[in-house]
Structure formats: structure tokens, C-alpha cells
Amino acid sequence: MPRETCWNYIFMTPPYWQQASLELARTDPVMRRLTETFAGASIVSRGDPFATLARSIVGQQISVKAADSVWARLMTAVSAPAPDAILACTMEQLRGCGLSARKAEYIFDLAGHFVSGQIHARRWPKMSDAEIVAELTAVRGIGVWTVEMFLIFNLLRPDVFPLDDIGLQKAAALHYLSGERPARRELAGLGERWRPWRSVATWYLWRSLDPVPVAY
Image 1 (cartoon, rainbow, N blue to C red):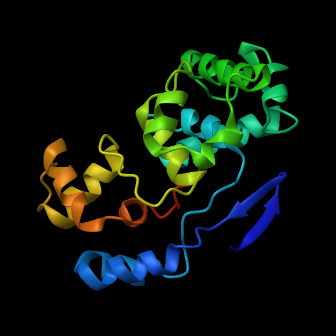
Image 2: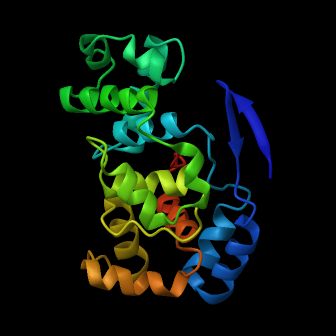
């Protein structure tokens, strides 16, 4: 598993990526084109659960470029992307980084859950996707979409399919449905062709819309 360290992260790419890409390309002409276009690129996990969840909160309902800008400002304002560093900030400092009042509250609350021990990251590798969704959605400001991003980008789960993600909906419309935005049930049906690699297919579809790789 390739690794690269930075900001005290361990950057990791999924061990299944090449197999998944080959299998998707073999069965789906759109995926064949996308895997060729973005050959050599993949999902990358920073390996840090708090930073991944915090970045997911930052990215809620804004573009990848805007989220990257806010995150960069936040990292400039704090000593490290860690719960203690966030809790040392005031709400005004967090908002000064470009966070909305609600997102600032959510990130502060998330940091509090980590510091207090209410989140048990060591258990996650043995838990199912559904169990992790149930645990993390109990935290204020973390909904199903945020946990799905966490499952894809931190735990590197291979078969997550975020049906409510706007980028996924747009890409599916562009590549498969003549520009028509799919209904949720229709999108779910489309995703069945990509099992057990729906996380990988989703990443390629996201990348087809944005030159900036999606990362949390």
C-alpha cells in the first residue's frame, strides 16, 4: 500500500484500486474511458479520522475548490489538524477561516467528541458500513453523506454509493442519462452494475466533473 507522510498524516491508496479499475473498465464503456483518462490517480486517504471528518464538514454543500480554500485557511489558523488545536480556537477564529457559523459549531463539537472519548475509532475496522453510519451520525452536524465520505476517503471502504451526492448525480446524468438528473431509485439501480466497487466508480465520476481530485 503506497504511503507518503505530510502534516503528520499517512497518505494511503487502496490496495484494491488496480483490480477495481480493471473490472469496472471490463464491464462498462464509460468506466473504461474514465479509467484510461485518469490512469495513475486514485482515492487517497490521509489516515487521520478527525481531519477526514472535519474536512467533510467543511465540504458540505460547496465546491471542491471552495472547500480546499477554507481548509487551507483553517490549517493556517491552527497549529495542527487535531481536536485539541480546534478546541483552542474561538468560534470567531473558526468563522474567520471562511466557515459558516453552523459549520464552525459542528467542527468544534466534533473535536469535543474526540477529546472526550465519545468516538471510538479503534473499533471501526471491525464494524460494518451501516454500524459506522449509525455511530457517527449521532454526532452533531454529521449526516449520512458526511459518514459516506468518511467511509470512502478514510476507511477506504470499496463499495460505498452516496446517492444524495450532487456531484455523483450530475456525473451519472452526463455520462449515462443524456443529461437528465436521475431519481434516487434510478441512481441506485445504475450503481448495481458497479458492485462491489461503487466507491471507485463514484470517484471516477466525480473526477470527470472536476480537475481537482476529490479528497478529504
